[in-house]
Each structure stands twice: as C-alpha cells, then as structure tokens.
Amino acid sequence: MIQIPRSIYERMIDHAKKESPLECCGILSGKGKTVQKVFEVPNTEQSPTRYSMSPLDQLKVFEEMEKESVEMVAVYHSHPQTIPFPSETDVKLAFYSEIFSIIISLKEEGNPVMKAFSIGKDAIYPEEIEVVS
Ligand SMILES: [Zn+2]
Image (cartoon, rainbow, N blue to C red):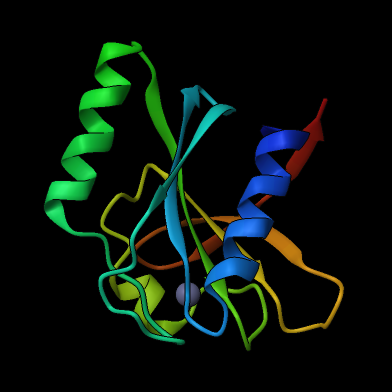
C-alpha cells in the first residue's frame, strides 16, 4: 500500500488537469512506500498518449533526493483520455521495475482516478493507494 499525503495527491491531479489534453509526468520521493514529496517533470514528448522525461530533468530530481536522503517511490503520469491502466508503451518503458507506476486518468469528466501498479517483465500488479492527511 502506497501512502500519499492528501496535499500531494491533489497536486498530482491538478498537474494532470493543467497539462490535459497532453500527458503529464513526475516523480514521487519518500521512504519505502510513503510519499513525502512530488516533483513535476516536463513531458518532453508533449503528447496526449506518451510521456518521457529528459535525462537532465531526472538527474536534477535525483540530486535533490540525495540531498534530502530520500528515495524514489514512484513515477506518475496521466492518461487524459483513457483508463488508469498501463498502456503497451508504459509496460515497454517501465525501466524502473522496482519503482511503482502511478496513473491518473481524466477519462471520466469531473472524476479523476488514480491507480498504482508495479510493472514486472511478465505481469502488472496493482498496488493500493492510501491518501493520508
Ligand atoms: Zn500511460
């Protein structure tokens, strides 16, 4: 179970809405499965169906995490038009298999849905999200 503070949860949804109809992406840092901070990262693809983070932007986040002695907990991105389930591309690009993938779906108007997964080579495992205050 991944724990996300409500303020971060809401910021992620705002980020998805702000970038829509393009996908947004970012990194969550913290300890174990507890999220402490959100980093919004530019989507270099500028696409409604794909996302990518530049190596430089990732490096900046890694440096910040190292300074704060925290780890990467999850990578998140949005699906402006589709359900919150990893696409074929998402599975192919899941380069951090030990890191959770979180997807924010804006498919249903007025009802954003956030789901977490761990994407393995052969299977996708859902992981529960708990919003904490
Ligand atoms: Zn996706």
